[in-house]
Length: 215
Length: 215
DNA sequence: CGACCAATTGAATTGATTCAAGGTCCGTGG
DNA sequence: CCACGGACCTTGAATCAATTCAATTGGTCG
Image (cartoon, rainbow over all chains, first blue to last red; front, side, top):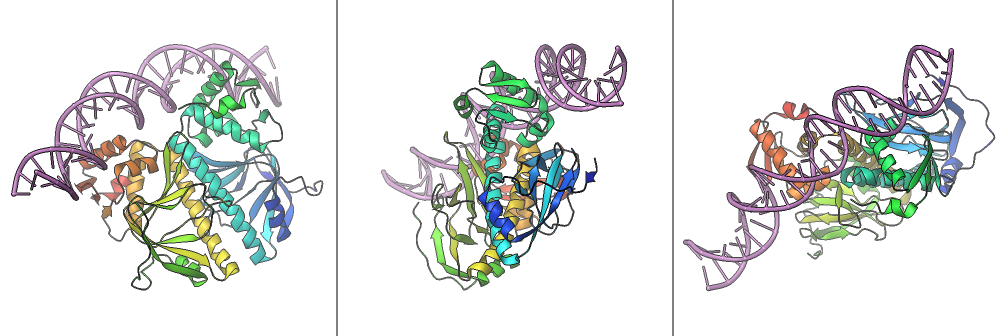
């Protein structure tokens, strides 16, 4: 559960996003820190500080209500930057999903760094507004379908989606129960839209059908 | 339905937010433009450009699905700045709710402006993540209660909330139907938590009870 | 193998929606 | 001034999607 500290990595990983490179150009990145599964990267209420770059593994950013309900705001994969938060205190907390390597990013040249940070914050804002639509106006079937399509876009393969997180995480991300996640996946499987060779792997047979899930 | 153009205003209005003043210091604001009720301020897909400052009235920022379902991302009152959007195209559209005066804000001193813009984008991000929690994990009762409390904080009065938007708008903001909005308001009234002297006015009798609405 | 945790599946329940009337408010024109 | 029309809001009853509760299955690790 505890975060273990850094070990040297194979120089800079392949980072999808050109914006990340722009950010790094004006940053002072630390060594990679390894966070074992379910360990906390930053806590809710903690002082806001640096940004974080995922080198490998998966990270979830969450909010928790007083009575223990959890909403996962986002998942982050290798190449993603997270840690944005308004104000001086984190309104959310970040945890490693599956054992993740994370690099801490601090500004080297503050103004240039701030410019890149704005770009990335705006991208984050866009994503979270996409998610508002999903949570506010989509059925369970649509939520799962959109989730699979989103992961498909963000991963290398054309038809395979890896699910490093468990059903419970998916549920808390999509605003449903984990039983519902299970049931909807079953429906998609029965309709031959996806295959489920193992619990953490989805093979998409018919991406068009996923995009056209009704209601 | 059409936006009418500017008329001179009584200099700078009282703007709640010190951040807005910081932004304006590095901006080149236009005259106030009046948008009649339900007129479009910017459209989805339109080129991203300036920010907008609400001088009076109310603005809603929305997203629409292909089949006509609408999610309202945010409401903006006098003193609020909106128009943030990732990328070069607006992913959302903004409309006047009730006839609103809006000032267009363009950068004068770009780098300083960018710095202030980052701050405000981060605040927006925080708000939208608050809203994710509401949409993903709250019951209809909790959503309405949270909505009333949010408006209460943002308005001058200690116990009166004006509702410039109609039930349908509230519903699309909270991810429920307008009938549900009506019914929940009735429940709160019957429990003597609020009064409804008219359709666009809520008087809060027991803010504590609102904060403690269960499940 | 047995223990444990995650995932699946089924059955009953329920919160919210859908569908269907009414009611209220307001502007307009006779 | 009042009647009419239309838009919005409220309320009721039936329906349904998703949850809750309850087993059962599957997978992993000591």
